[in-house]
Length: 385
Image (cartoon, rainbow, N blue to C red):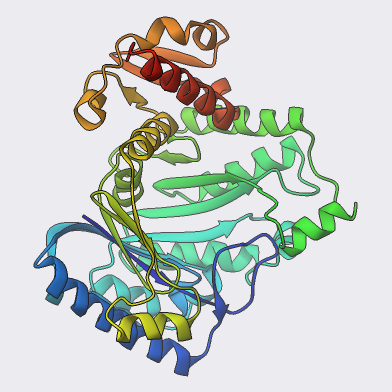
């Protein structure tokens, strides 16, 4: 299974972020670590020595923890689970906190072998607009420090579709990020989440956002550029050099079981899914109550089928029409004629038995996947799948 550990602290909330996080304090961070270790011990008793292929510390800002606290979490993971000797162990970091004296070299010694840096942009005006706590100089220094600390697998997060960002600005930003020599890039289009400062400013007409045509060009030309620089477009928002895909995230997209620890973390094991409470107090009550207050959902067969199709279609590999039958019990071979309008419209293609989104299809992936799911539902209802 995959092990996800949510670290719910930030020095401040970014203007676009809707993830659960609270303000960092050393006291609360220490309390949080104790609770996560306690939660691990409870799950070890419940699940037994479950095999773990990947460990992912996400947030929030995991790089606000001390190396000692990271060590406590990873030691507990190795103590309570059968962590694979070649496990991918990722830690998300912000550039400014990653530059804390000795932090990167210490966590590398502890076994963290993949670093994901939340750069977002290498332009200070855009970083200020987003509310990021670092500047472009710190971002470049963090990349250099990561390499010197021994990280051979380095990912950078970048953002497009930002207020005031033109196609030329995005391509220049992307080129500068590639020049830093990362092994992986996650490139996300800005989503205006309800209740965030950026969403409120956009609603008030204070921000000039790129139009749909320019956003489409950002996605298409950005992906094409990365292809020329040796990156495989293996998921809608993710690009990797050979051998450097995120094994953890790819596990999500291929339907592997995952256990989430920490406040607001989500888990899916078999046919069951649950979410930990938000907030340290509610999380503490659940952990100390041996899971009481954690709402568990039983996933209906139809839900699992729809999710598998949706997640597979997000990947560059696409939906394996033959092997998907093993998970869903449905024969997908009859799907091709039903989606011919999508294929002739240049939105999907069939390659080596896989139904895949084209780059144009990725631009409107939500609509294409929803249409595909509707087709499958209709075929199921009539007994044709």
